[in-house]
Amino acid sequence: MIKSELIQQIAEDNPHLYQRDVERIVSTLFEEITAALARGDRVELRGFGAFSVKKRDARMGRNPRTGAAVPVPAKTVPFFKAGKELRERMNGKG
Image (tube, rainbow, N blue to C red):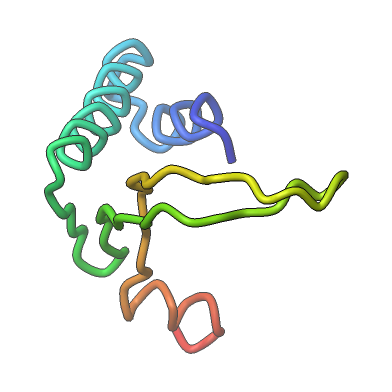
């Protein structure tokens, strides 16, 4: 599902809301999650999961074509851990 499909589904499930309002709500939610992660904060949505940031150390990688060693700089990456309820639904227990 892509963002526009999510917006469409929420708008269909909530006919009392205007589509532009649903778009604003979804965009604001994603912006707030992104801003929190950029600050290094953790975002937990009970029953769904938690978003956090992990730091990856610098390392030596390999160019797959030439096999030459290439330095890979340190970086931070977003990480998602599914909550218990989501895992159970994915495995047919909910």
